[in-house]
Image 1 (cartoon, rainbow, N blue to C red):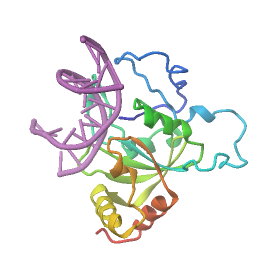
Image 2: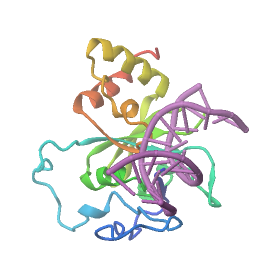
Image 3: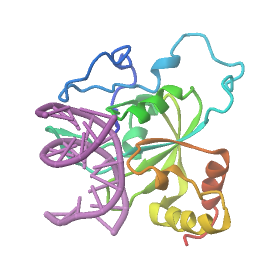
Image 4: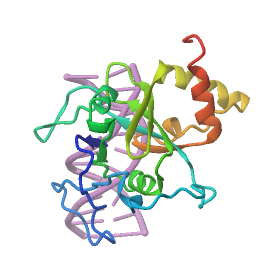
Length: 194
DNA sequence: GCCAACGTTGGC
DNA sequence: GCCAACGTTGGC
């Protein structure tokens, strides 16, 4: 699982350049700070959309409850992000190949939902921007169960969550959202819990 | 804590 | 390349 680290300035190169050979499993690899790839000093102001077709909205999972993994507590909930200096963290510990590719495809300032996984109440807790910095809490917590209900319904009606990756690609810890998915989920904030 | 659904590893 | 064994993710 992704494990945001409590430092904003971690050097964390993307791991070995061409993925040479296989990694040993104990290596804490997949250091993929979402900040890394675009860290050139000058702004990327013009056309953040230079690669059309690339997703610009994301969902990133992290565990808000304590759990030891090789003796290290992986707990990192949205409150932990908020508590960081500059409310910014380095998102590392992502090993899955596809997830890392998404991490690399991210551009600064893109928006991402902070998803709480492997916990009492899984769901979307807040908003971040890629860097990775806290933006705000959701106006209300959006539980997984509610998203799932919409997903099921939308499969029949063709609604916005019909293909949401959260349900179609289980276990992917970094995932893209379409604009429609992102907007729909934001709209749920204004609704009564279902 | 259980276990389903995956992803990874490694022998063949 | 196949596939069984194993490890991980993550809901419940």
